[in-house]
Image 1 (cartoon, one colour):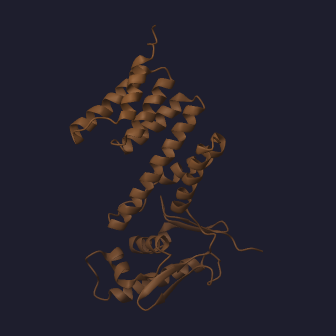
Image 2 (image 1 turned 30 degrees about the vertical axis):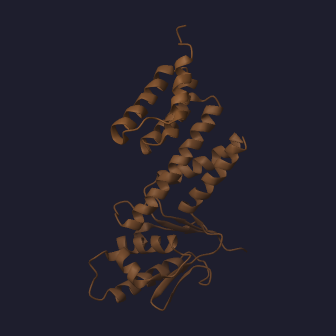
Image 3 (image 1 turned 135 degrees about the vertical axis):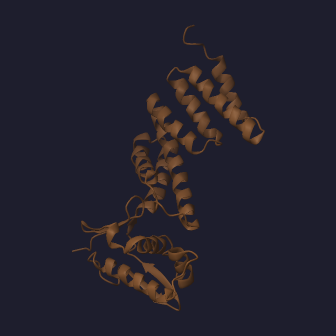
Length: 261
C-alpha cells in the first residue's frame, strides 16, 4: 500500500495531516515551534543556518543557551513528523554543519504552494476561454489566500509571505470577477472586483474591471463613480492622471445611452 500523502497547512491553524491523522497547532510546542516549522517548510529547498533560525524564533532576545533550546525545538518537530506515520526517510529534518533542512516527500501538498499553482492554472484556463475549468482553481487560490498566515507574528519573512498571499488573492479575485463577468453574473463580478480594488487601491486594472462589471449590470452611474474614485485617488496621492486605457473606458461609458433613454 502506498504511503498517505502529506498535507501541510500554514494558513489559518498550522497543521500536518497524513492518512487522515491531523497533527494540530497545539502540538507544535507553542509559538516558537510553529514559527520554526513554518520557516523550515517555506525554505526547505535550502539548508538554514542556526543563527537564521534563532533570529526567526527569538528575534533579538536570544536565551543564554539558545543552541540547546533550538535543538530541543527541532527534536520536537522531528517527533511530530514521525507521528504522521511516514517513514523517517520520507519526512525528516537533517542537521549538519550548523544548519537544518526540512525534507518532505516530493508529492507533499503545502497550502501556500497549492494556492500559487492553482492561480497559475486558473489564469491559463481563463486565457484559453475555459471558464468552467478556471473557476475551481481560482476558488482554491482565493480560499487559501484569504486565511491568515501565522496570525500575530510580525517578522520580516512572515510579512513577505503575507504579501505573496495577498498578491495571489488579488489575482484570484481578478479571475473570479472576469469569469463572473463572462458568465453574465454581474453582481458576483462586482463583488470580486470591489474586494480586489480594496486590497490594491492604486491598481488601475482593478478599477477597469469594476467599471465593466457595474456597466454589465446596467449601473452606468456606479461605473462612473468607480472611475471618479480612481481619478481622485491618483490625483491626490500620486499627482497623476488615470492611464489612457482607464480614460478610454470612462469615455466609452459616457457615450452609452442612459437607462432612462
